[in-house]
Amino acid sequence: MDRLPQPADPSSGDTEFTVPGRFQNLFPIGIGAQGAVCAAMDTVTGRPVAIKKLSRPFQDVTHAKRAYREIKLMRLVDHPFIIKLLHAYTPQTTLRTFCDIYLFTERMDTNLSVVIGNRLDHERLSFLVYQMLCGIKYLHSAGIIHRDLKPTNIVVRADCSLKILDFGLARSVGTNFMMTQYVVTRHYRAPEVILSLDYGTNVDIWAIGCILAELITGQVLFPGTDHVDQWNRIITTLGTPTAEFIARSSQSARRYIETLPVYPKPQFDQLFPDSAFLAVEGSGTAGLNNHNARDMLQRMLAIDPLERISVQDALAHPYVNVWFHEDEVNRPAPVPYDHALDEQELTIDQWKALLFQEIQEIQNLTLGTGTEN
Ligand code: AMP
Image (cartoon, rainbow, N blue to C red; front, side):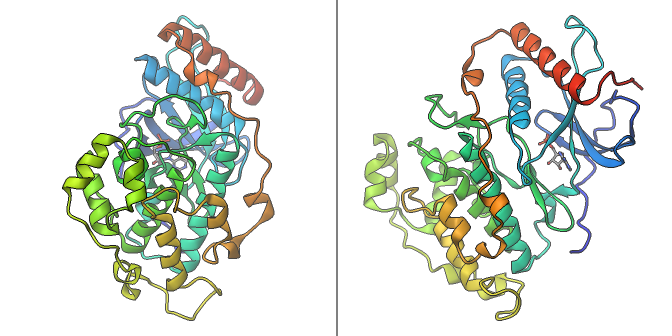
């Protein structure tokens, strides 16, 4: 595959990075909700790394809790399609002065949003979908529903290998922790979430369906401007959901849906016509064709989660099963995530103490006594 373009300058130039001297050649590559990300070279291993500096991680309980959850989750997982935490570091040596957290991960080339707009053939499209599916299947096996899959949360290499980033918003399956509306980027938000219904692991399938559509067309599938607009876009494109689905909705959602016109179900070959695809029919790997891509999209983008394809079935679908690799699809589940950690009601200072302890532990394990620049 051709070299992928780099993300735009994240203007993280004014964020100072203080890291052990073994990490050299730092340059900014991204900016996220938690802070700036730099690329660097680890001169000890000779490997490229990404360094994320959590900016003001103790500014409030939400940030501190999120940082703690992310670090705990990253330490737990071990899957080729999920980003690995290589090291964590703080230049401060006491809890009193502790204020900066650096997280070091394997470095990829760019995030998936940068790839959108480059037309990809079926081999690449399906390989990207396969990797996302394996990654979320593994997370689900640990009791984690991602809920915030979006192109900027997925990093890729030029060879089309991919890793899922960011666990800050992931919360465990089966907790009664109410999912707040701001949690998921609206464009990839599943209908059951928009309507505040019960949700399960296949909220992540909806997001992957939206991402696949976006990779094909170069356009966000449902670029809603607000909550209501998001829902309207979904039903005008995919048709009014079934009476059974509406009956399962809350009273207020039902009332709202009933005020809207009835929209017909679309033909997927009109939504995603042959001209939307790059590949020429009949060439390449068997199963990787427009028909199967559309079939996958249709199953992933079922408004009713009960009709939506499961992760397991999606992995068996002819559009992705060509990539099947036992160790990637059925990797043993990690130790289940202890969701009680997320639910602790602690003060900022208590979170800070937990984080300090965690960072020091990782730092001792992975960096020994790193020397500062
Ligand atoms: P984050 O704060 O983790 O959401 O990251 C923000 C952005 O930084 C991502 O969208 C990527 O563009 C970039 N980035 C983060 N981690 C990596 C990595 N390991 N490899 C390459 N780019 C990364």
